[in-house]
Length: 121
Image (cartoon, one colour):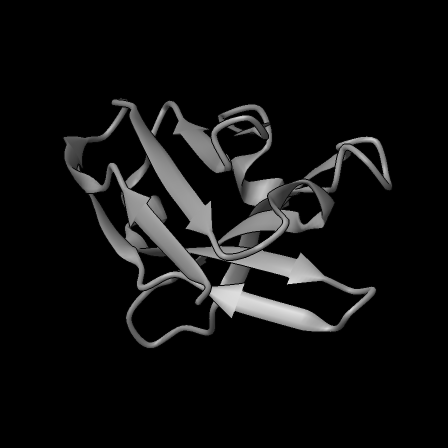
């Protein structure tokens, strides 16, 4: 059974920092592209950041323009965990953040339950 369990969300003032974690089980973590998405009320879910498999594609990172220079995605393959370090948070970062695991080779796509991030002005 695949599980992606997010943690680390919460309420923070603008300019503050949070670190999200996503612990994965039931997948071969090292061959999955891991991503963080977010969905604000009334908006579509959007990609925040992703990090590719270190085995197949060298662990390349990709960021939405709105978070470049403020957010950092990383992965610990020994712990089957992906992180999102969020600095200089803005009210517009307020959303539910979802962890995603994707393996295009076998066409698998898994999601976590989401964690709320609220940034007050």
